[in-house]
Length: 530
Image 1 (cartoon, rainbow, N blue to C red):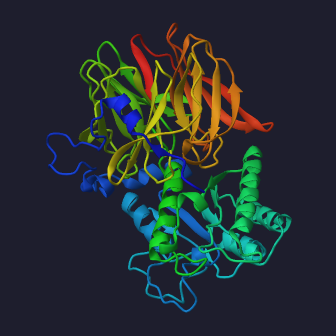
Image 2 (image 1 turned 90 degrees about the vertical axis):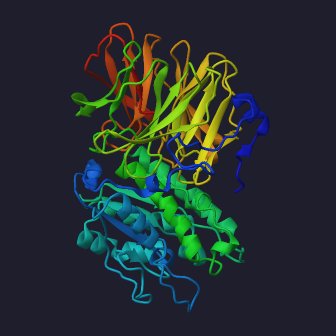
Image 3 (image 1 turned 180 degrees about the vertical axis):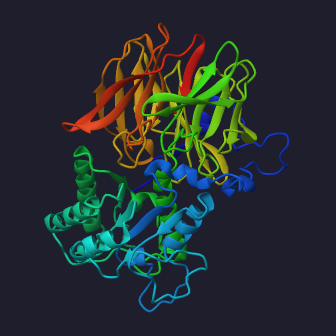
């Protein structure tokens, strides 16, 4: 599928007077091409317990089962000898850097064909060359009950396509695989990836048209299971891995470069499970970020069972600064904080430690027009980096700064223009289809979710949710109860009450439970996560 994000120099000029859009380091950093400091990309403070951020599944060690066919196994072309461990080796290495000694790959299979996988890589898996959904279904109960995984990475279907299985047959076996997996109480989440393309195309059943039909049916199946409250998450491996001919060892199997791309997509999907956005207390649930407009103090409320349970103090800021959004910008498993000064136009990222201290800061390109508001941070283009979304309060334009290894690039998303009185209030994957959605709020209190597709460029549908009333301010979007669904935090500016909308699927649509939590004090506003 072609990429629909387009670079727009006209919109760059409109937003920041044609200044450079590359990420800028602060004055203490070395000069050169602006980028994230290398030391921040994978640095873990050894004095802190990185495993604490895995409390989402209630364990200090998380068991992950890679489950699938030859691509999970790590095969290249027939007869090839490889030592890179497929996607599993780079994925395990990345996870182990972020969560030292806390990740355990499980399964009955090991790479006996490729015995020289990289040192230190956990080779346990359930990747089986040539297996179909039928083959996996025949053994899944035995494998699951022997390994007791917490998370299953399911990537399966290439051999169904090769063997001309009708979708109805594949669907029946997928149901068996899912039911057997969830029958084991250790399994908390199943991530379901679709099938990567054939490069180049083949003939008969082995065509990209057949794969795309399978993938379309697979996504419908996943979405239907989500509406049944099954703990699934869809992963669009086909589009987000972006495999090209140079990434392939044969028509079907990636080479080392292609497997690294697949690993990056899995890592991105797992990050929202292992380290939810805004989880400052490392308990697997988002917390509430507050800013005082009078004193310029900042703090975090830790939530437990949807109630206030403690406070994490943050450094105060100078006048004009606000908390704009939270995301893990340097891939260390900790939510960082992006602040914006609506007086000077400066923007700054605080890289946070696990005890809510600032490890370092960098400034990114200033935007002097105060009508440009930072409204959320999410991976809009599927490259694994959390991007920054902007909304202009005057023109209703919506733009995204796409963050990547080379810095920050301003890109225009061809999404429908917002109507008068509407603004983007938050960005999150509300329907768990692997793509961030837009939460819109109107000046009269109406709220709508736009369900977005690839690159945030296509609106697939929308759903209106309850009018909260104009006295309520939408302050945060995050998974506040640890159930995998993006929730909404509200603050009443009149009586200082606060509430959570705990989102869920019910009766085929998104609904919510309204839960009030502790009253706040005068002058404080909820400013995250979002």
